[in-house]
Length: 308
Ligand code: C5P
Image (cartoon, rainbow, N blue to C red):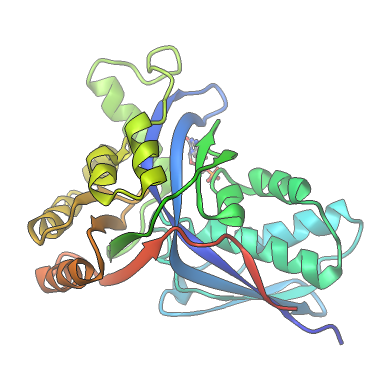
């Protein structure tokens, strides 16, 4: 019997998410600066009679256990390319907030892919794994590589970035999720309503901020705080107005920056250090404006095999 393989995969926060116009294919061009942070899902695969998924963790009930789960799709995609069956039991130990804008589903896709590759001895190249990740979703390649990276295209064309220090973060988990397509659609609607138009011909090409990349390179939290920006934030707050109170609670407690993580509804607070993180976390818990609070730091490593 082949031993199970477990892969640990990090969550992410987008320190910059610049969103271009709506493309004819329904996606948006991005300048997407990803930072992996130390909240992890663990994906374990073991040989089985047929493909099946189980999930544990506080949010497990919200995770689909059918073939729409990115972990199942990853196993099927790798199996198909290598002419084999995908008969594995995939177990997801879920710690990343579900539908929260922290790429938890993408993490499970990248994790299952790396785990199946190891279990089956497929020996797929890094390039092939990244190609499969890009087919699975825009954020999945970053879940594989971790660290920090600039994502162009729809976010899948990655350039790794140097990070010169550790950044401390507090995350406030909201009740319920937000649908990523709904948040992009709301971003388009707000642009139309403001009279600028929302298509690729109306919206300037998104660019990464030089000041933000410098701040990452030098590990300067105050400079990073001054440069963070999320073009989806207004849309997420429009769909979930209560997020404004969460953002204000973190800012009032001394966070250097407060922003919506990706398409939300998780909110992210950059803080100066561990002591400040505890202070902001306490204030967020006391505010009653969120369901849970998590303290962590980044950058974190990408998908990593724990046992083989
Ligand atoms: O690639 P992924 O499956 O994560 O995308 C989910 C949805 O998010 C897309 O169908 C699209 O509506 C939206 N999206 C987008 N532009 C991107 C990435 C995602 O419009 N760059």
